[in-house]
Image 1: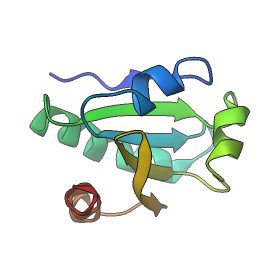
Image 2: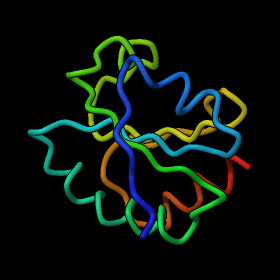
Image 3: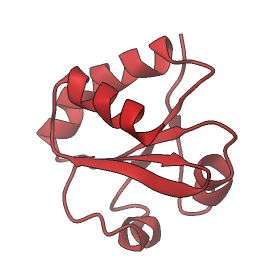
Image 4: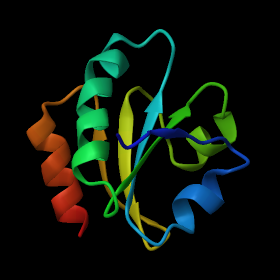
Length: 107
């Protein structure tokens, strides 16, 4: 089972921007029902794409510097990073297919 790692303001650059493989980043919050709805989808993606995609979560309020850096205004906000840059973004709860399309479009 592929684990979804937690990242922080301090570990974001190393875990996400410096990653050798694409990274799906879930900016989430405690009082976010939509965040809880997409959690099982992200876990499935982490398992299905283990080795070719890293999936991480970052608590938006507890890591305000990174949230501000990427303009996160609502949750969940999901980014795909590759080569140290944002390659795609989704905001809100979406079906699994939308996340798969985001990943594929990001290359």
